[in-house]
Length: 557
Image (cartoon, rainbow, N blue to C red; front, side, top):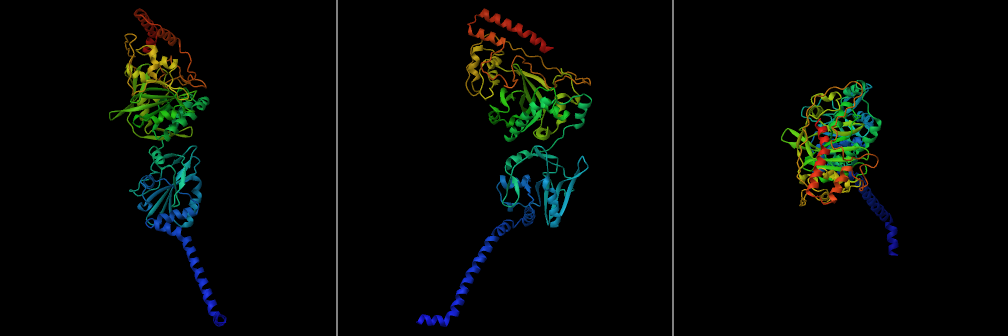
């Protein structure tokens, strides 16, 4: 009864207290939800307390669905290589990039935001003005946006023509540059960046773009009637692209060399009658990852490794129907490089100008690495301006000199043949290649074909007194312009070892390890199986000298 009376007397007060309590908790929960919603924005503002201007620009463009890609090498190195915080960046000039498709929406958005902008433009062939660079100034910060012009397999960034303060150096826009397509990821601060930052920075060092000589290329077609062979291109382009991209992924600097470089610069393509494709590499960057990558490679595999790692190393790759040579170049003093050329058992060296950096060029719509001074390189190989006109077939390399002969121990490791599946060959062809110019018995060859360079090698008994005959030194020949009809020249010196089979046909080099060697190899094999007397050995040596005599005379001619 007492409770009932109390409720009747105080029910208004009790209801007031109840509603006040409910309202209080509703208010607290609402405030908490509002704080949760504002927490990310507050966090970003706290993180960007020293870069509020930069955050404002990036955030505004992100809200407008403009995807900025950070490509500034110094900032990328700061954030992803050294792992330093974004707030430690105290730069008033930062470079981003956008793809060409986002250009018009960006320009419209910047005008709506009333930001101060400047642009750099170039005129295209159809007299259309293309915007290459955009500079957004907000307070003390300048955001540089480079436009990525899309080509078939890479982006090209044009030169900036907008005047800038003297203390500003553009990482992109200072020169014409080319960068391969790359994947991106979204950063927590609402801009994108290359997924593989270290590889992007590595490619940047060779991104300066060099044009081929279009004037010379047109003259080759009109005056000399030299046109590219479509059947040749179908055999070469795909394996070439595969080799170039593989070396880039392995981060090994390379460049197209020899007649391949001449074809790119003089023909803006390939010389239609060239017999192989040449690549140059730096010996200082060599490791076994290159050999391992191309052993048994389904597109282009190593079929022969010539020379030693520290002396005249050359990998001959095969696509099954075409040969691709990788030459390692060695530094000589402070002003030159050289790479080896193997003719039978003789070692030649071809000198090159000293350089440590490569650039980019376009070949068939793909980016390849080329020497940054192609004219200097070609003058060194062919003679000053001799390469500007087609040369006769009997042209001799002016930068090639005889060096020495492989000694017996080195010769055991100077030739390695591989099957298309990447296995070291020790069949009759592999044996005959070494044994024909070896100082020991034919039967002893298989024992050292499988030997490793770091193992102790016991030399077998001499089969006879071996006299090393040095081949005649390559003489410099005066090059004469060919007649105006299509020449039958060949820019590369043909291999002197005509007896050795090279890959040909769909199956590459001899895939059957039991293939019979040539007649000379068969004769040597028979002689190796029978115990030779001294008289038989002398008679055999006389026959070999008689067989080699016409070849020596032909080579001297």
